[in-house]
Length: 226
Image 1: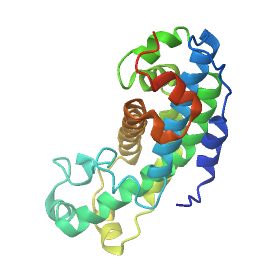
Image 2: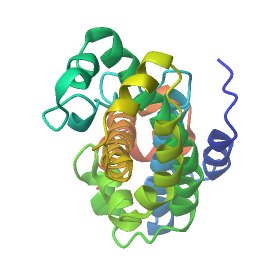
Image 3: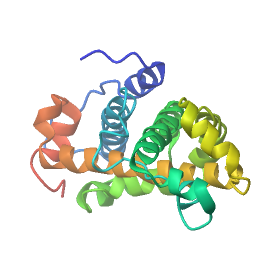
């Protein structure tokens, strides 16, 4: 399958193969690089799925729901009935998830850069810990970086509703705060990205040989490193 998103290429560069010594005891440097490789492959796989057309919308773990303010209790009158109608909500759902794709495009290179430069204090503990420990480390080091980077792109995406009926309905609702909606959706996209990376990490840990990656197979293939 060919992916046409440039952002994914940055993750591929971050996942360059690293030679490991052919011995049974792996030095700390190799374990550190194995953690980076685990995150690089996990991120690459996650973004490759999310950045496909309808990548968020079609994903069971990454789909973004429509904010309450686009059909919830804060809208009233005839606009409420229209916003809550199935056809409009379906269109809004797809648009919110298209906006998520725009945010993910901006996030991908930041994730790749963070993995290349991240500080790893105890690689052995990360290798031997839970199935999504490396993802948690990545998220902790990035903090709010992805949210701030994605916010403008997602905000623009939310404003590009492509259905005349939806545009008409939204024009009748005067209390919709797009700045608040954009930040809410961006937070959900941030969560979805890390859920997707974590799911990929868990899958790689369960079956490292499926990656055909000698680094991951060497470190994860025999179970616990030590």
